[in-house]
Length: 157
Image 1 (tube, rainbow, N blue to C red):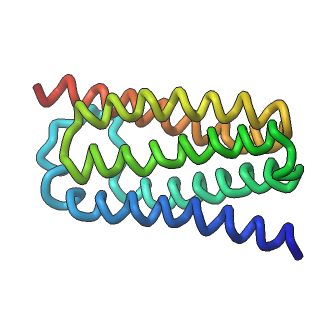
Image 2 (image 1 turned 90 degrees about the vertical axis):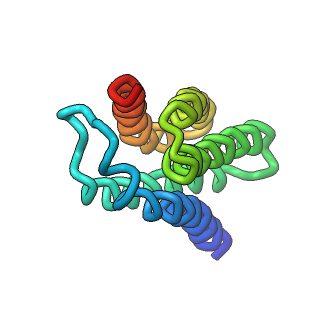
């Protein structure tokens, strides 16, 4: 029963961050974002919600696999703190890019986000290889998002 509660908590925390990000995104996606010049490889807007939903679920499962190894273990606590840092940066990116409408600020945040995801993967890998593997699509998507963010900065000077 304790493990089910841990899984539910991980899912809830990750999805709440996703909902907070969506709050900032929704306010700009129909007004400010469409007027930005974007590269030809910019995906259609409808793709972002399902991709992020799946990625947040994978993040939650990844964190759960680490947490269930035992919070009393120093490596687990440290890895989960790094995970929470990247989750905070994930939410911050939406607030900066869409909420503050700052493509440059978003680029700065996403570079830190990308670094923290890689750090999380390395920390998780030492505890659970499946947990680390679950974050590979996430780091791939954020790499793509970073290139997209950089292109938007360049195209909208």
